[in-house]
Image (tube, rainbow, N blue to C red; front, side, top):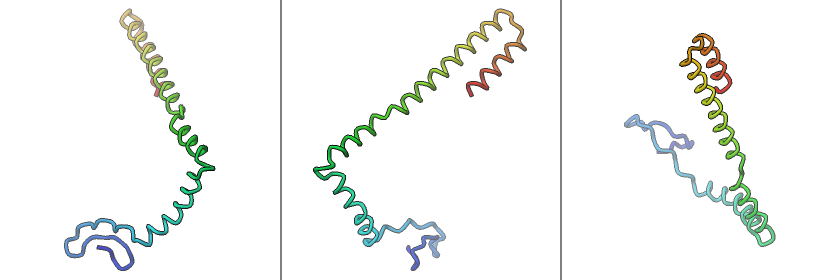
Length: 110
């Protein structure tokens, strides 16, 4: 239930939390009064091409894809180094020296 001041709190009878109140009709009208003019302008015949191009450009942003590829390259580089260090250890390289190399790779590759 909603208190007179609109606050939501535990139900006095059960102590259980109450669900948030639904937006009032006046809240929806207010929100619509802000959004409707923007939508009309954005999708008007004079702005439609620009709006659609902006939407398409936002869908094809390669920034995230470049970051993912860079992360994969870094992981592969680090894995290659660790594989080499493991082979060097198997070939008899001083374990203390190999541990130092591994510590450097872990610091660099996070």
